[in-house]
Length: 411
Ligand code: CLR
Image (tube, rainbow, N blue to C red; front, side):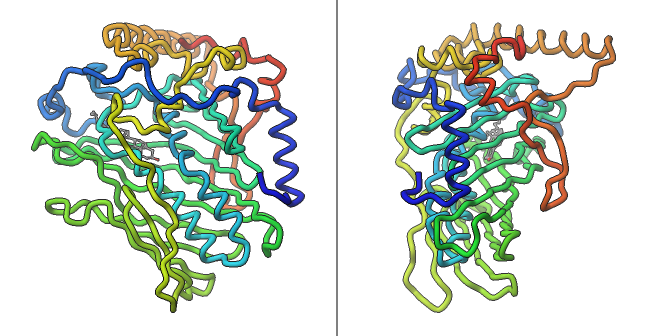
C-alpha cells in the first residue's frame, strides 16, 4: 500500500477492503506439499508423442503422469510472483523510460518459472474459476475458464497501484522436432503511479512469447521461450521492443534477452538486457551504470519442480473453504489427488469430471442454449478497440455476502 496514496489508488484500496477480499487468507502462504517428491514413472516423452505429430495439446490423451498438479488458470496466476515490479514501476514517478523497464521486466519475469516444468497443466473445465489473494502484497486476483474449444482463461488482478488483466488463449502444436505453444491473447496493465507523476493512470499492453519444448527426440526435453515482445504505453507513447533469443544450437544463447525502450518519437531512452532465468538490468542511454531490475527467486528440489510461489497456489486452508465458490480449482478432485501423489485416483477423477463436462455440453446443445461465461463478458477495449474479457457480476461482492454456493456444479 502506497504511504501517501493518490485519489484513484485510494479508491481501489477502498473497493478491495469493502469487498472483504482477504477473508480466508489469514494463514501464511503454504510452504510445502503433502508429498516430498513426486515419484511419477519416468516415461519417454518421445515414445508417446511420436504418434501424435501434427496434433494440438487438447487432442492428445496422455497418461495423467505427464501432468503436473497445477491448472492452466494457476499457470496464469504464476504471473503474479513478481508483481512487486509493478509496484516499483508505480514508484518510478520521474522517469517514464525506467518505469517502462520495470513493466518489461515484469512481463518477462514469469518465464523463470517454466524451467524444469516439462509437464502438462490440467486443462480447466468450462466455468472453472480460480481466485488468489495476497494480503501481504495488497492484491486480489480472479480467473475463469471462459471457453473450452479453444481453451481460453480470462484473468484480472487488482491492487491500489495497478490492474493486470487479459486472456490466456494458447494454440499448441506438436511438430515432431518441437512442441510449440503460441499465446494469442493480449495482456494489459493499468498503472496508477504514485503522487508526483505526470500521469494519474497509464495503460500498457503486451503479448506473450512463444513457448516451446525442444529436445524431445533426444530424450532431454526443455522449455524455451523466445520471440520479440512489444510493450506499448498508450498514455505516453513510450514503447519497448525486447528480443528473447531462442536457445540455439547447443543452447549457446539460452535464456538471453536484449531490448530497447523508446519515447513516442522513437528516441532511445533505455537499454535492457539479461536472462529470463536469472536477472535483468537496464541502462539509461548515455550512461554506463546498470540498474538491476529483477532477480529470480532461488529454486530448489520440489515435487513436480514447482517454484515456491506455485506451491502456494493450490493451498486449501480451513478458513478459506467457506469463502470459495464450488467452481474453484482448489476443489477439483483430480488435481488434488495429483498433488498428493494419488495418481490412480487422479486418472479416474479426471475421466469422471471430463465426462460430466461433455454431458453438460450435450444438454446445452439439446436445449439450444449458447454458453456464456458467468464472470466476464467479451467487449471491445475502450482504448485499443480489440476484443477483451471485462469482469461482470462482481465476484468479490457476492463472495463477501456468501452468495457463491450455487454458481455451478462442475466437479
Ligand atoms: C508459459 C508462460 C505463459 C503462460 C503459459 C501457457 C501455457 C504453458 C506455458 C506458459 C509453459 C509451457 C507449458 C504451456 C502449456 C503446455 C506446456 C506448460 C506457462 C508444457 C511444457 C507442455 C508439455 C508437453 C506434454 C506433452 C508433456 O504466461
